[in-house]
Length: 149
Image 1: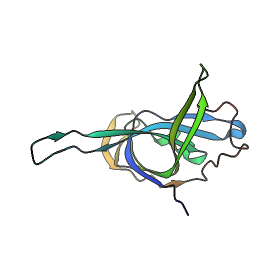
Image 2: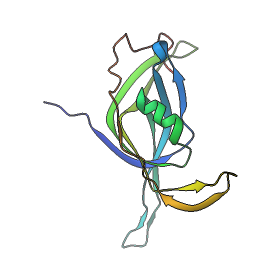
Image 3: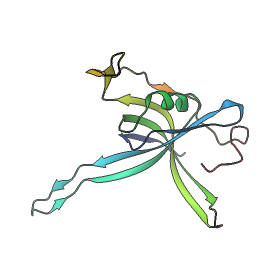
């Protein structure tokens, strides 16, 4: 038996990059930052905050959701699995990349509501639903020939 499960809560580092592949299958990529808070040890040594960056990949409905609602700075809850893949770069060197393939994405925190003129009003609690979608399974029917991203 084995388990490959990741749960992250963090902030989006830049707006998602969304592409549409064959048969209008959407895929979105974006970085997510998680931060472990720093602390001061008993002897006075200060341990600073530690930020880890994660490469997030979501497919189909989750990618379309990302395109509409996720922006740089958004706080997200993501549930998924870790995948590592390799590719050859332009110079022929083999490169490896570790990604989080999201199965569930939920917006957290608050967002500002805008009026018709685009002026922010009072922030309102985000009530976006949890979005689940069938994750990309890596089968050739769903993949594009031009991967990696």
